[in-house]
Image 1: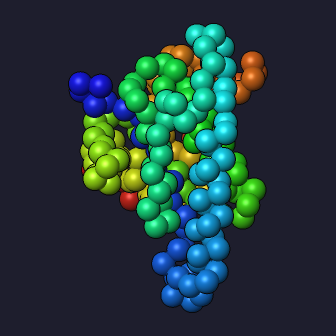
Image 2: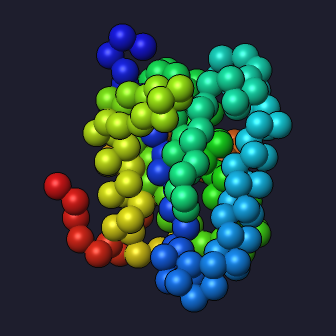
Length: 177
């Protein structure tokens, strides 16, 4: 992508610093559990009914993990990229909660640069996703208004009954700039 506009998800385990200080072995087990959840995405495939195309999530949604954080990001900003990232994010959240790993998640759209070979990842979209997740006082997925509006525009639904991304008054610690 010449303009490097992508969808970005930031996933963070709650309470990891204090867990590491209290019990490093247990913290390692939690991190290993999160890595297993992340690896589940490698085998996950979907058919995007709007376009009729079939995708392996790992072909269009990339991931990186460092410490207690997972970052997912797309190749670009297409409708399919949005759908696939939201599906991957929801699946990751579901598996984390099922395995007893409390996480906060933020999803944003914007400039994001990466270089896997040099382990470099940066951009305003990552900062936005981080702040969205970290400021929320709940276990859940928070999206930027842009991501919400685009999900509405592409009619991203849970089955045929309801919007998969909905507006909500989420308690926050503070608004980010």
